Image (tube, rainbow, N blue to C red; front, side, top):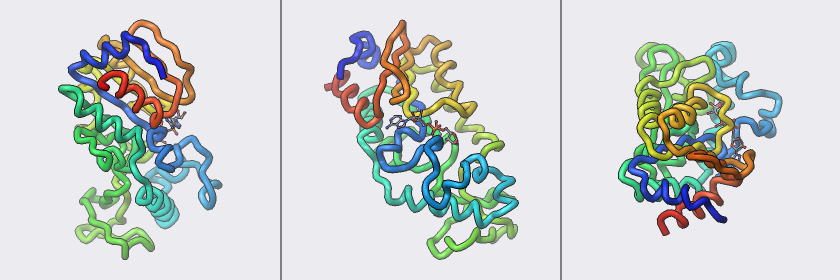
Length: 244
Ligand code: APR
């Protein structure tokens, strides 16, 4: 796999690299992306119909069971070379910020340290009403447990459609997009705001922007590179080309 010499030079001289990842980075770990057709039992539902506070209030058990299914997939998944190479990249540059829309925790499992979880984490739980964190043990899987503090229903600690992002996480992501030298957008369809605007913020701040996705055709123009391919294949080649 060949890369533009100017891109390799930009990576080697970068003081701060920021990366935005989406579900495509976890696809090679066997986790379905959001725009893949839902499989099996869940094929009759769209994520937009389940991942909302209204859906949870209307039918807590249905939404709880969907997350139980998704969590079972996450617990069987392992980081893939894309995750591992992002952890390696973090070790090669003075400052590195990994902004993820994914809730599977695979970046942390792969060794990434500075991770901003824009949409929460499916392995964490909290009370729907008072937001108190809740430590789930497997016995609770049958139905949403009740909060010991207020009696509210326990829910996954993820951001649902219509909910706002964790403020601190979003501002940290915005600051990274504004201050980095190179901004990667990897494995995301760029359909959900405000994450989708971060590459534009980086471009306006004159960063080099790199998109990695099987859905794009490889092309480059000044300070903007699109690389056609899977994260698990492109990233190992790119890290090797830049840092040996
Ligand atoms: N490597 C890189 N990209 C890939 C790969 C791969 N192996 N496989 C698929 N892709 C790309 C697809 O081409 C698509 O552009 O990953 C992207 C996945 O897009 P989505 O399914 O829309 O996932 P994402 O962009 O993360 O969705 C953003 O939307 O549903 C909400 O909150 C949810 O965080 C999610 C947000």
